[in-house]
Length: 342
Ligand code: NAP
Image (cartoon, rainbow, N blue to C red):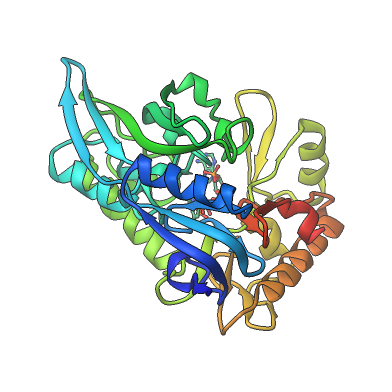
């Protein structure tokens, strides 16, 4: 028997899995994982499926992590939150603001759940999980041992962490701890946030501005399937940047602390005239070129062919080769996204 995955991932592509298990506890996750292993079938743990592209039907068990619970404690300087991995991310942001706890407002409206947030170190408008994460609680899928990693042990980097490498397919995230300073400092260096008054701005105003920017620029997955930014912003060396600036003086570029320079993938794609470009039912979003959308019953093949076209045209024009941020899932599990679209 197969089950549709359409409601369980935001790209809305019509694929199925052999089994779908809703897991409310760490024990449920391990049990479903081990059953799949015993049956020699693959297993995949999914939050809300907001950063995934299923290339095919999944020939195993998809385990939906639905562990709930938000616990709030405090010390003299910080709010300390312990949050179940299956809690919806945006709900957490709203809930903390309602409780008078600021710090997550720049990360409003990011699709997905709390347990997925450390995996790719989600970030928006200058704030990343690594800035607010105190710890991540995990369970070892083979041994059922529960253990805690502090933020440093998570090896957070740009849209990256230990969960994409050493711990991939070995652990499930069961909870995330956040430390939010009571001494709130607004972060208003991005986009429309720069218009806000530094001395009087409130967390709610930042939240509202972020929601407004996202709602006007980004497609709502409930209406038009997508997985957010399809490509990572490329990080290049200074020599490459200087050459690009000579040819394209207006190219947006953001120097990083380590001496490298981050480019805006959306701008590169837009310069190739790709906004609105289509392959089958897949399209480059009209307002934000970094997002590929399921416009009209797209197949995963449509999305892959479109992503290949985008990578190819950007590469040929700028000699910068984009890599997907979205994770690609084949019949047996995750596959290399770069190799799939190269
Ligand atoms: P944008 O403001 O058009 O800027 C394009 C890119 O340039 C951004 O992605 C951002 O990189 C970088 N950038 C812009 N202002 C910057 C600054 N002051 N300092 C350093 N870097 C700067 O971007 P957007 O598409 O509307 O997105 C706004 C924010 O939401 C970004 O942070 C973006 O990453 C985030 N977002 C993420 C997703 C996702 O699926 N991952 C989807 C939509 C938006 P960074 O990405 O490194 O911030």
